[in-house]
Image 1: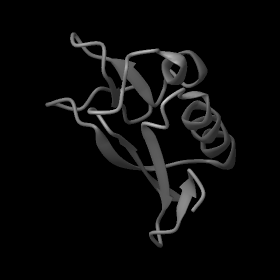
Image 2: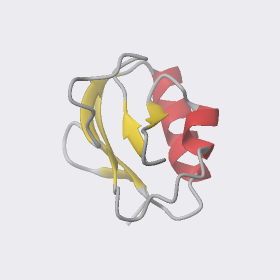
Image 3: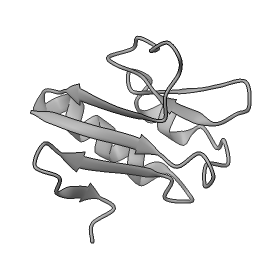
Length: 88
């Protein structure tokens, strides 16, 4: 399954909870803003939005990481554009 993970850098406060929950999908940059990794690999340049192929377990971990964000800065959508988190 492909999902798109997006971090709103304007909302991100650098709490790091997403990194703590899913370090394969998130990392903090020098400005303490989370950005999106591709299975632990940092893209060049670092990006706040990325579409990745995930297993069911990786999807669960990414969703938990998004849910851990205190300011709802992380959005996850499926390959059909349905927003998985936050639910609308």
